[in-house]
Image (cartoon, rainbow, N blue to C red):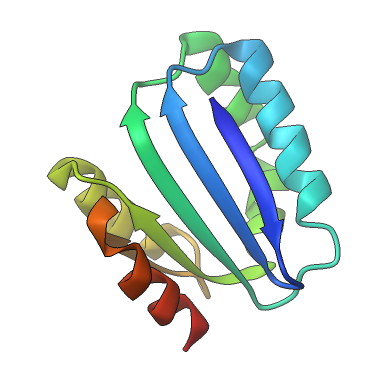
Length: 121
């Protein structure tokens, strides 16, 4: 599952759980682009409920859209990731290095209030 909710003018909340196949990935990326329309200096809150690696087809699709996704990420300056998996926290924050101008910080799933506060500041 990949659920995207627009919260106000400049924030997207994304809930991820389970394993995405190619069709689900395509729908998720299309929805992400559509819901991010008009956002500047945006914020994202990723809630990773139950993570599984996407299918190989889904990963290939995501890589095929990498240039467009890099452009999309320029609309955002902060992203908070809620997860209870230490390795996802580490990878999330490392990913921030790959996107200039985007600061990514990981929080435990029980730290939603702190994550939202960080996003607001």
